[in-house]
Image (cartoon, rainbow, N blue to C red):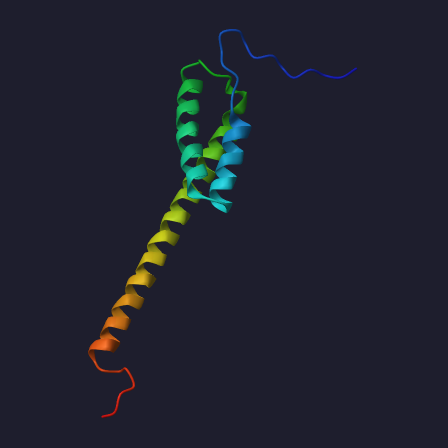
Length: 107
């Protein structure tokens, strides 16, 4: 005989912990938008769980997904800032080289 998972109590929404965890992991690996979505959905679902409006059996998955979303968003933000800084450095170095006459001309 197969065991059935416990039923969600009536009047309570089912949890979306697996979805939030998958979005959080995708936020680390693929794009920060998935991380932001996981972060926001995790906050909302945890609030509903504490209010008793959502099934609490997925609380651990929801917390893990929210944390992965936060990490992914922060890492992608740091990567974007690093990329912008490198581009600005390249532009400044190119402008400084052109201004100093380092174009390979005759002295």
